[in-house]
Image: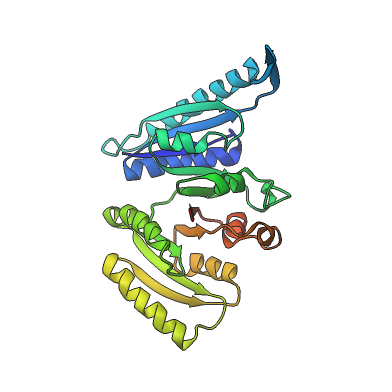
Amino acid sequence: MKNILVLTDFSENAKAAEKYALQLAVNVNGNLILYNTFSRQREMISGNVVWPHSTPSSELQSISNLQARVSELKHELEEVNDDAHKPEIRDMGNAGSLTDNLNEIITENEIWLCVMGTKGESFANNVLFGSNVFKVLEKINCPLLIIPKEAEYRELKKIAYATDFRSSDVGVVNWLYELTDPLKIELILVHVSSDTIADKEQDVLKNQEKIYKSQFPKTAIEFYEGENIQDSLHKIEEQMDVSMLALLHRRHEFFESVFQPSISHKMIKHTEIPVLIFRDL
């Protein structure tokens, strides 16, 4: 059973992510867990030790909101066809920041996928460090599906994975293949280059293509050249009519990341379709 963890703050963009995750759970025979964190707003002194202590009101508000969202999603589930899978929906809450215990929760609950929403460009003034999405992205140990506020669930038909065919991509492609193959979803591996691909590089890529084809025979492989990788990825969204774009997030060195945000950061800000991010561990 595929357990899907939805990180929610009960905002409108979070609700859009919840609805998307519910439909995805129906289609992949998964279950849904809504997860919210509430702040520690004061400290309690015991002996000579200061302990973080959440106020009862913040915890009760979190519990109340979670229960209300679970109830709404269960109501939406009543509209699903009787012969379709009906996911189990439950909630979890914790005191602290969003990333404090995230990986422990992922491990303990055997989470297959995390889902959260984003508003895009206006989500944060400081794109690198001001957004919960990017804080989660730097910490999380499982795939993270980012849902733009305007995105509505549509039947998955094509997933495009932008890859440079490194060895670390094999695990990602295997995860995607296990998702797409039984559901008869087309998986397209796209190599995007901002420069003209030299003859020597083309030979290397063709050799890697043969290796991937032997391991994942039902995948399509495309090569795409463009002046700007980010713009090329947007063109791929439109021209190939993909319903989800997958990327591998490779963390830059600290000072490089300050001045040059990664492709995954940029795509999360501007995409109109869900973006599935795998972190290079």
